[in-house]
Length: 88
Image 1: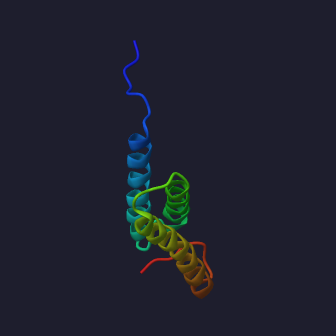
Image 2: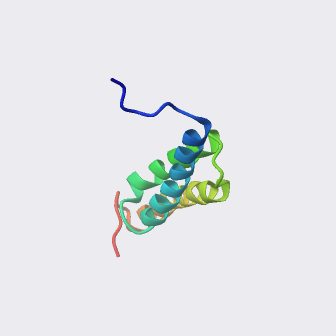
């Protein structure tokens, strides 16, 4: 007994669209908290969504940019504070 639906092109596109949105949200959230973890996750999700052919490439590119910005922001604050983490 197989309970999952067979994979179709629309299922793969819908998954890629979800990944694009998730990368955008995680990248945006990563600007505030846990940027060391959320930045790379946003980058990976955006790359996967673009590779799978999302119908929302702008959202995936925003997630990719925000993921990179998370890591750059972390590096800047690490240099300013001379610590591995930063706080307000």
